[in-house]
Length: 328
Image (cartoon, rainbow, N blue to C red; front, side, top):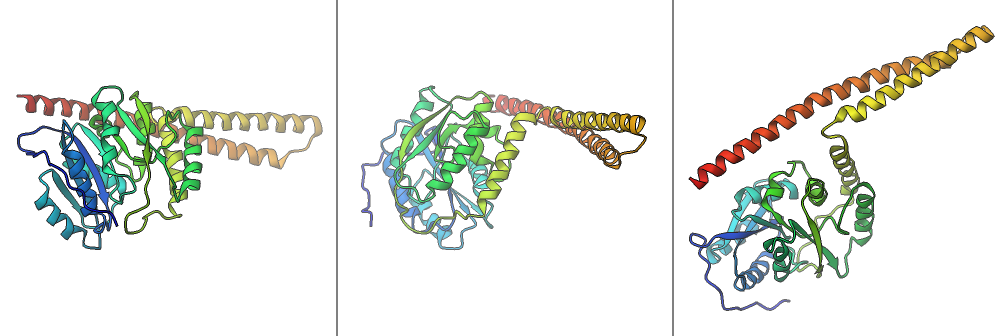
């Protein structure tokens, strides 16, 4: 059992000290881990030259997590808590934490103590020094899901231009990256891919991995096919999200061309041999019908893409107005 950590605390008053770093901690049934995790956070924060806060998101816990967090919030002035009444997943938890956080640098860190808070400053340092916009950890140590992780990361590298080896790990990133993150379930796994595609610099550092302190993993094998489908959805979004007609229109045109070619062959056989080809007419009808559907889908997708672009522009203008009001 780990021994308590004692340190000479640097008093932190959130009302007077500017918070630069917000550590977002999704927690589902982590009542046994949170006291030691936050004690280690306290020791880490006491040594840092910039303001820190820790935002713990209770994602529908069924154990004593709410009670434990209430007691810990009275003890630590830098602790903020957010509660989901029902489990909504890590992506929603990170978004809730982001909305409650005040720092311009966000850190995703689990509460199970497989990663120690003492490594958080190493993730944050390249961003504070303007050497990177996002920093992710590369696991060092025994990992129970190493086989699944290798397959997942291998498939991701084959589909995306990924500058790192481990996409699904602890990470620190500028707040603006989360501002642009799609609010989609489980897409937090592809935050690195999406940020890199938008031109943000991404780097990687080794981070030690420790055995879980208490509780059990929330990972289930049923999430693997969901992850693969999400991966394909992200790939399509990056490749054709702004120009869906490029995908569906080309596919529709190809089917039309195949239908026309089948028609020419069928007519040639009818003229030269005097017999019709049923397979050719079936192919023609199928290609023309599917080609029309794909082309119409592409046109509809273009209208959706225009609407999304207008929403992004309105959001940007709203952010500018909000920023001006804060400055005034």
